[in-house]
Length: 373
Image (cartoon, rainbow, N blue to C red):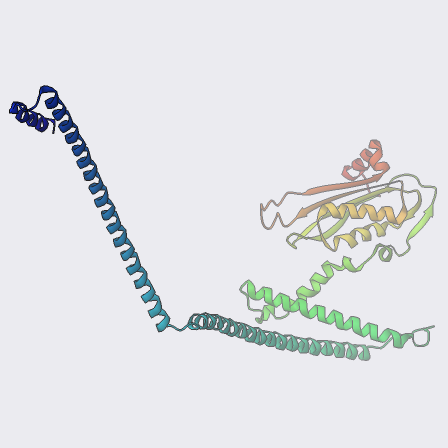
């Protein structure tokens, strides 16, 4: 643009009608007008550009608003269609029907379970009633057999019996007999079951009476449960102040059952005591050992029980008990050591406190120089 202004001044100068100062002013005004015109053109171009940009942005915003309105219209149309296709209460109805269906299924399962439990209870009740009838029948048969036996055997006359004592004793005797018969029946039935479990036939000739024999033998081997020290001593305790020395009964045979396997262990018991004004019958020491050995036992407990029973019976100055046994649970089975023997001891009073007294007792029971007359 300045170059155009300079060409205009070159054309005006040769005219000659004006002077140099006028030509200079003319050129300056023309150049200023040219520069102002150029500035105005630039501003107008900037306005055009900004106006076009604003137009373009307005167009974009119009397009986006139109697009958003179209999307919202589509979504509204879909919602209206869904509303038209499904009524408002259908969703709630569907949920309620599902819940009702689950409840119905649960009720059906509960009813089936209750029905099954009722059937099971009925079966168990019938079995219990049948079992009770059988037991009652056996009890009646046993009592009838006892009554027949007692009627057949002559009864000894009872002297000085209070009036009504026989009537009072009869029901208790019958009840005891019935209880014994029921216990015996249970044992024989259990033995038959055991024979069947080991693979035997309990109905063959050699085993027909085995259950009853086994029951009787087991009751005899455990008769100590029904005996007391007072019964077996039978008041055979006497006052004797003159003897203050040791009394020893050795080599008392015992037979017992191991409580772990219910197989026998057999051996000997040695009992010694020092009297303190009372002595006990010699056979009673053997009977005391018999009471505790005729039970399910372990040898350690058996030894202690015999010593405590002697202390209770005569209150001596001291007691010493030694038990030597061979246990068939380690002879017939397990390690199978036939020559093994177990020795246990229990001491009380002066045998425990005085080592010389204890040594004398052990020398007596272990010595082989004791001569019999």
